[in-house]
Length: 22
Image (cartoon, rainbow, N blue to C red; front, side):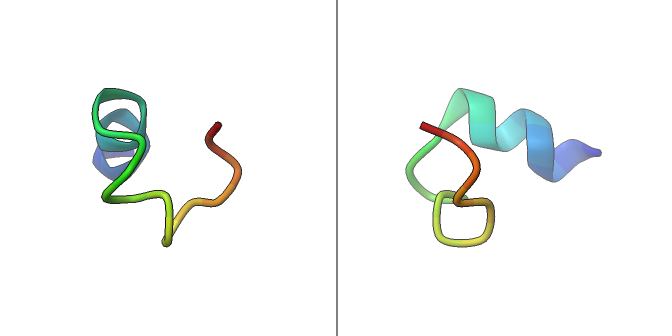
């Protein structure tokens, strides 16, 4: 799950793909 790691690092670029991130 690389996209999940990116969400924790960025949390803004993947926020649209993974809205479960703060």
